[in-house]
Structures are given as structure tokens and as C-alpha cells.
Amino acid sequence: MATAEQLKSLIRSHFSDEPERFFTIVLQVAAHEAQKGHGELAHEIRKLVDKARKQKGARIIKFPQDLKGLVLSEEPELSKSALVVPLILFARIERIIQEYKQQHKLRKHGLINRRKIMLIGPPGTGKTMTALILAHELHLPLNIVQIDQLVTKYMGETSAKLRQIFSLLQRDIGVYLFDEFDAIGGERSLDNDVGEMRRVLNSFLQFIEQDTSGSVIIAATNNPKLLDRALFRRFDDVLYYEKPDLGECKRLIQNILRSFKPSKFPWKAITSECIGLSHAEIDQACMDSIKQAILSDKRKVNAALLRQMLQERQNAHSGRKE
Image 1 (cartoon, rainbow, N blue to C red):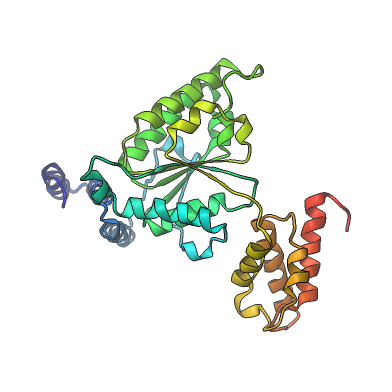
Image 2 (cartoon, rainbow, N blue to C red):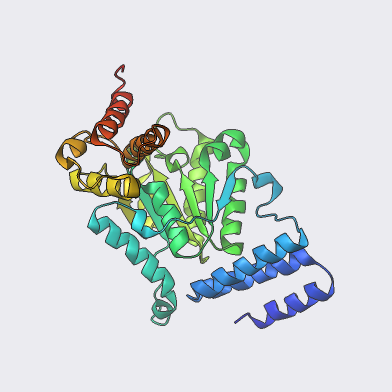
């Protein structure tokens, strides 16, 4: 239930004809319920707010004006069944989901759910997809922090922008993805580092350590060797991603092709073409095959077509000419 102060604020904003203030307080109530482990209720409250705003024609201001373009928000619809990763990694992601959904049980024993997560692995191996799935499964919006813009566009103000983002973490509960995180998480002892970036990293370390919001913080990087070692102990969990093995390649292709997959498929020949490709590259090859099959008025993707598209991705991946 809403706190006494929230109820009084709701009443005041309603009779003062302040719709945006009213919506903001309602969203705070949703965040309060999410922290108590009532994810479904929080999700329903947010849906009601979105519906009411559209009916009233109210302008939705998700972020302060000076953070526009630095934080992108979306409501993902991607379930965990779409994720093809090793079973051990899948189990650890499931643990994050269950701890969040049942955080009220943990709090009774003085424990907190894991919500500060670092994802490490090559491009296209499922890091961003994991953030999308976590947001969907937890009924939270996904807010993607554009680290490259944060650093290059506001070099002298990056720490101040980080402070604003961590204030948003407290106010608007969600999943916050810091992608390309090594841009600010670089080792402080590197000779080519500049004083400004050391201050930015120190600020981030301080903010993430002090953060007690109900938001889930995800930092993703392709280059773990560049990260300052002090970062790792600030996170509750560190998940490592790899390119798919042959079995995962088969599952991934089956998931993507679905009704376009013929009943018989030479899987050994197909998966051999996937070696060295990332999840994203295999996904792209499958989608290219589906489009080609549709344009050719075919109902299924045959093996020759899929192998051709996979070979094209292999050539692009290795830099070879067609």
C-alpha cells in the first residue's frame, strides 16, 4: 500500500489540478510496491498511468531535458525463453529474477536481492538481450544509458550527469543498462588516462556503492581487461558470455526459424557453418534467409539458403571478399 505521505500528496495534487505531479506520485507508489516484491501490482499501476496519460493527452516526460538522448527508455516484450545461453548462465539469470520477485522474503532476514550486475563478453552474445529479458520478466522499463554520449558530449560534466542518472535510479524504478561500460570504467592506473576520467570513475564507484534504490543496475562490456579491478566488488554478480557452441547454435536457429524451418534439416552441416559466429550474427543470417524465402514465394527456408546466409556472415566476420 502507499505510504501516508504518498496518499496525502496524491490528494493534494488531484485537487490542485496538477496531473503530471499526480502521475509522478502514482509512479512512486508503483516503485514502492516493486521494492516490496509486488511486481505484478507495480506493472498494473504503470499501465494505468500510461493509459490515463494518453487519454488526457499529457506530455510524458520520462527524463530531465538535459538527459534526453543520454537515456533511452523502452518497455521490452522479450521473455526468457528467447535466451539461448549455457544452462549454468541461464540459472544465474533466473536467480536474479527470483531474488527480485521475492525480495520481501530476503528482507525479513536482513538480506537484499542481487540487483547490481556486470555482463562481460564479445559483441552479439546476449548481454543486451539479457537486460531486455530482465526488464520484461520483472515488469520494469528498460532505461539504456548511452555511455559514449555521456562521456564525449559532456566531458567536463560527466560526474554531474552520473549523479542525475543515479537520482533517476532512486525515483523511477527500472532496469538501467550502462552499455559500453569500459568507456568510464577503465583502469585508473593506465598511463594514457586523464584526470577527468579518473574522477568520473571514482564518482561511479561512489554512486553505485551508496545506491539503495530498488532499480536493477547492469553494466555491460566487451573489454573486461580495460576495467578497473575496484569495480568488480561493487557488483553483486558478474556474468560471462561466450559465442554459442554447436548445440546452442541449433537451438538458436530453431527459435528463430520456427514455422519457416523444414521438418528435416542437415543440422551437422548447418551448425558447422556457425562456428565462430555470435548469437547476433546467426540471428541475422536466419532473418536474411526468412526474408529471401518470403520474396521467393517459398514456405520454408531450405538448408542451401541458410548455409549461404551463414557463409555471408562468416565472410563479413573474417573480412573476406564474397
